[in-house]
Length: 245
Image (tube, rainbow, N blue to C red; front, side):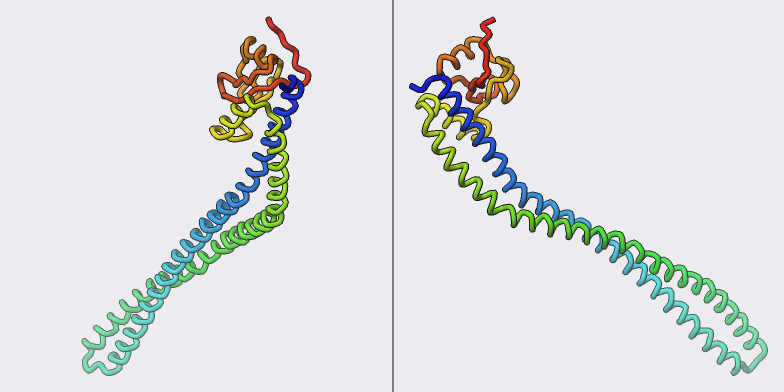
């Protein structure tokens, strides 16, 4: 059977490779996830712009409606002025004059309302520019992220393939009893969480749980030991010092 140093070196190397693989696979997953998040942000900002456009359309419609009301009053006033010229009696003439005055007064109010509605619609357009700039910035960020991922992906996949080959070599070196425990942990918790180094001569490097003295003694006796808290397969570092106390 391999001696303690050999077992430690094998487990340490496997742990380093698994940690690196976890990082690389994480980068590979984060790319599409980040792009999806950024796409969602673009859609969110675009929806904000569309809502502003709907609001502007409503304001423009209202302004148009006010303009039409003013035009209708102008037409009504013009008709009454014609009628005024054709009035046959003084009473009819005075009645038309009063009606024209009332129409002109109403027309003035409507004209003010129309102008205000037009100003609101015109001023509202100013809200578009900041949101459009926000969309542009989000789209540029998306394209930059996408290009970086497209560029990095082949290199990441190549590194993953290389590390997987190295991992197979190192795993094959494990003594059977260690390999059986390790394989079970890889299936249940994943490769990067299958191993942990003993830190501070008595703590699990995975969860900081204090390792019992008898468990440390079993590790030194070249027996597979898992942390009672996080179930990682433990190994001791090169500078480990066994304190039986």
